[in-house]
Length: 341
Image 1 (tube, rainbow, N blue to C red):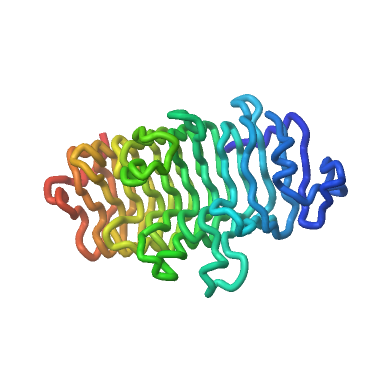
Image 2 (image 1 turned 135 degrees about the vertical axis):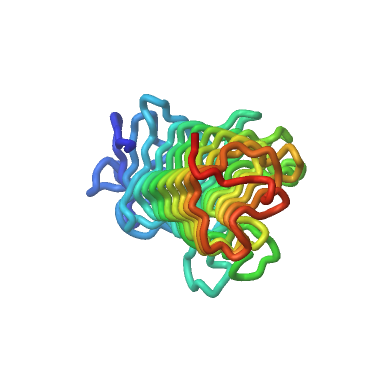
């Protein structure tokens, strides 16, 4: 379990604070989150006091492996975003730890599309072919995104998403019929068409590798709980509970990249499959491991296999999936081995 190791200065922010104060105690907090974030040096921490914040913030510098930068609060510290930007929290720097607080993209009547913020947390490299490393999002509640709830992209590697509750992603498309399928709980990488559209700094294949997504509860009521795009590899998706996915063509957990691992997840109640493997090309979405998952009551099947070869498919408990256990273009070619070597 990751420990809070604030070795430097601790700053405080409150909705009733004052930016003319020093921000160094609960009695003298700032009111603006960005003011405190601008001051954070490696080893420093920021405590969000309870209350509602209609603010966005963006990191300004790296922490280090030895001295991380911490931003923390209780679940009653709720960051709604300002509505002026597409992203509520943007992490562009290494070794930044977010923990404990709530990010709620809904500010107002849930029946009004305009009241939803697009992205809740956006982790993105800002230098050519160089991403963000050592970021962690721990024990938070992320909810009510217009688009994806959490994004990891552009060469962002070795980041950790753990013990969070992620609910209500993709309101624009899945509540308000926006015409797309955007609404992931955790979205890793960049789709090839977005690379071609210059959505990143360069047109390099996005290698967002070696990220670890574990022990989360994810109920998107939108699209995939975890979606890994083409070019992103060696990500570990473990011990998550996934439900509420609503795209019949995809799945609760999806790998369009190669050499990713899905282990010990429970996926149920999805309109799509439990787990889907396969990308845009025959060379995409291959050599993935699907190990000891519990996949049940998913409409489009247990494991949907759209490309081959795959890695280990073994030890999975697959039951009561409407279209069968192993489905898709290559489902009949594969076998769920009872035991994993």
